[in-house]
Image (cartoon, rainbow, N blue to C red):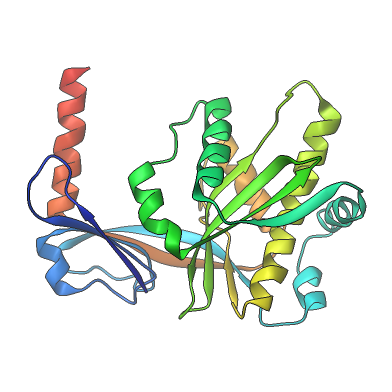
Length: 251
């Protein structure tokens, strides 16, 4: 279990907590501003609002061949091609600013908000990030929240950097690099003694075409579909509702 505490913004006292990978929420957290992500418990818990969450687990307990064998037949050739292409380099990222800048560049291209700096900085000591580059130019980046006790890596942030959207060959290269990076991550984490590679969420029964495409991408790596929970304490739940209401009035 990983637990992070944040001083409350706009208030001179108190704190908010983010807890990851717990068995179930602590009863005393029901009175505060607390959120539990990827909680193993799937039952209602008094004092919390539960949101069902699904994800895909890839087991890293077998051999490298076992890990590769569970990957889909249409994805294996793309990974093999990426690994055989000259100029592609896998590396760990040890500077949080690099992860932030790569993600924010990706987010701008997608019209998404930038990385939430306060949360990211708090998480960083428990994170591990990787990239594949070509000619010193990052093509894809993945960042994971790692629980050494549970031997679990959770895919938290990613960026695919399509610097030229009109260049179909480059887009294909980045797509292959993205698949290869997942595979190389699995081998890297296996070497570090981790046993579970969490692909970071799965939109079960979604009708959204973009989310369906993401699901298909994750399905291509095999693995097991798992249900977990996010639990939000009722004070935090109502604080969020009030915040959304106030923002709506201001707009």
